[in-house]
Length: 158
Image: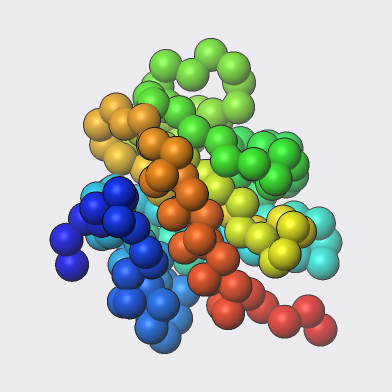
């Protein structure tokens, strides 16, 4: 599938019809012409738990992103604020939000959006590019819609 024309954007059918979270995330990465991505869902323990990833993520970084505390790193801050968090270039972040492990991936332009059930934040969806990138309002809005379409992969609490 080609990258989305964001002026006429709707969620591509391969995302809507995907049979598991990894396939759906891969379709989102392709649609947004990104290079890597993660999907986390909020657990009953109040932590974000990795549900799917796409791209080459080294083992040490993977250990840090399997479970993320609210307020820590881009996904954790996005979850805390229930708002998108983005950087044009991760390697130039001086705020302390972007963790050193994220910088080691060689990624630059990135965004994490909340996955919501109604108004409630229940997870995060993040994508990133190897080059600098600023995500437009239209791209951000569509990525949030894509995140909502992934609710079907949210684990059912025991």
